[in-house]
Length: 483
Ligand SMILES: Cc1cc2nc3c(=O)[nH]c(=O)nc-3n(C[C@H](O)[C@H](O)[C@H](O)COP(=O)(O)OP(=O)(O)OC[C@H]3O[C@@H](n4cnc5c(N)ncnc54)[C@H](O)[C@@H]3O)c2cc1C
Image (tube, rainbow, N blue to C red; front, side, top):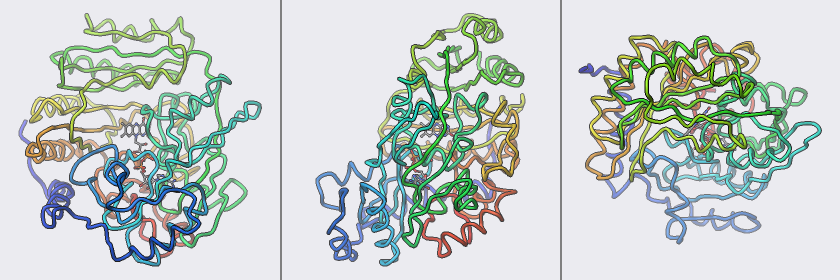
């Protein structure tokens, strides 16, 4: 199906194009801003973590993020791998004093590379990864940069599980501050619903605790408003007992994709809270639609619940089985093979309608290479949709909405424009079904229009909190609120 290019597509395209153009103009966009070198040297004294600058042996590894493409291939002036809140405060101060960009990174999984920047300061929280569990209170206290797999592993010996996403490497703060959806969202809600408190360093270097009783305006905003308000250093969140997990992947040939995704949509429209699922269409290897399912109800009921999928005919793969531990869900694959370059855009569907399904299947067939994939994450039913929209800043809680990721991977640099062009055109076509919305953690674009699409009804209240805690907009690498 040919896709018309619109003004919005042009704007979306310019994300990659602008980055590529800047890169080619001077070897690449960032120069490492040697001008702030003396200020970086002053910061070294007493800094407990690591300071990494261009020319250091580990610089290229330290600047790399999860997605590798022209948009995310940035050269910061310094990567401040902070050991604690004191380091964080000093790194913020450096960026403010030197008037250079500031990026905050945990797991580095941002779709649009918000965890890095050119010529500025990257606050890397990955070393702030301590976790302590209070099993009696069912509470975890975790460093902001802990990868979600480590939090899951720390809670597992107590039979407890946090609400986390499907990817083991996503950073805890980046995940929770954007809302945070995963296999337990039907039964327990969004991750941000379970935040008890957050310790934050604000733009002016103050250490704040945000909770229901302290800085409650900030606490409300942090639960869905993303990285707009400060650097979270420690998060305290609730954990839940999960008695059993039955999970795995049922895959069908791509030729059956329409039928399989319709069955997936029907299944999830009436899904019990304990069932979560996503469908991933891939062209790598044996092209297929992979339906990952996670059932946390009675194990004996799983067969009946999944009958509509299995009744479709012979799947090419069916790995659904009781798992030894919740952490084993991280091994569930959506297919695909590693590529040198990868790019992605997030979209939102109000509902997985037959028209949207046709569009998705048609668009995958038009992808330029075998590294293309489209994922349909169905998190939205049950507990996550029962929380009032204004209870937290995360108000995008429409039942049966679907979060989409459109991704491509390629190996030869020359294949990049065709791949990113396909992502853009697919994203543009999906907007007819997106109701003008986007999930903060699945971004596709930057700018005011995108931020309003993320926060809509909560935008004004969030902007007011932004004026209080970050009046000069130090924290911009996010769905940025105009204060
Ligand atoms: C493979 C993959 C699978 C995913 N699966 C899911 C899923 O199942 N459910 C879901 O909801 N999302 C999912 N996501 C999206 C993910 O939640 C977001 O990309 C999230 O922002 C990543 O956090 P990070 O720390 O890894 O990323 P980073 O790039 O390090 O950070 C992203 C942004 O988060 C903010 N941030 C990070 N740390 C801090 C901090 N300490 N203080 C303040 N702001 C901070 C900043 O704005 C930063 O720029 C997935 C992403 C990927 C790539």
